[in-house]
Image (cartoon, rainbow, N blue to C red; front, side, top):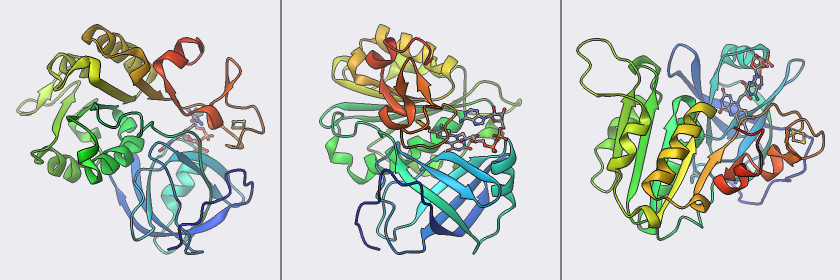
Length: 278
Ligand SMILES: Cc1cc2nc3c(=O)[nH]c(=O)nc-3n(C[C@H](O)[C@H](O)[C@H](O)COP(=O)(O)OP(=O)(O)OC[C@H]3O[C@@H](n4cnc5c(N)ncnc54)[C@H](O)[C@@H]3O)c2cc1C
Ligand code: FES
């Protein structure tokens, strides 16, 4: 795979072949893709691509993997409407159109040398998996490395085998919680905010990256601030309706900010100036 950067302003999709798929839950399907032109995607964790199916349309989907030597990249698609249902009907070997990677990703350099806390709610684990993979590849760049993952119920957890492997690592602090569980469930049950007081590391030296539903972000932000994490070291990724993905159509504006270009990752300080965001 060549590492030449892809055009960040492109309207023209390139092709990627689906090499592997798996149903992670009843509604979320995993895809591994390989660029047909042999040029790596070149993503930063937290960026997204526009996935295009001719005659159907396109949708922004987060990249779920860190760059790797094979040049493949992963996506997870929740079936909600036209395009995502059509993606669930594709088969291995078929190709799809891709534009991107787009957007401002997670601030990996600002987190260097600090205690890193990654907080994922539901499908928020998808973009954060790219950050977790990146962090584990470069584990010595961070002091403590903590991940808190909350799902509604055990059946909705994504990447179950990877969760077990991550939890088994001695150099990470990994916690999973569910809102509700069937009787006999042995894991932690409760809201993700209940785990914040037990975080490793020093709050003042902590950088926190949060992706989940807006209601979760509001409560997590309040807890992180109460715990002593600085506001300018808390980041979130926003999901907004997008069309072009390249700052041209204005579809994704929040208080004048273009989410596709200036985001989707924003700091809590930036979000406090975007009241329509959360
Ligand atoms: C930066 C970004 C990253 C995303 N990453 C992922 C991802 O990794 N996996 C994934 O499954 N989805 C992701 N999404 C959401 C995904 O883009 C939408 O679910 C998709 O566009 C729906 O297209 P559709 O044609 O299937 O549905 P439509 O037929 O267009 O709509 C079906 C329903 O979904 C709602 N919807 C459509 N687009 C969005 C949107 N952007 N945000 C919220 N609701 C929407 C519609 O209002 C409608 O209720 C992301 C969105 C953004 C902006
Ligand atoms: S999606 Fe078109 S400007 Fe952001």
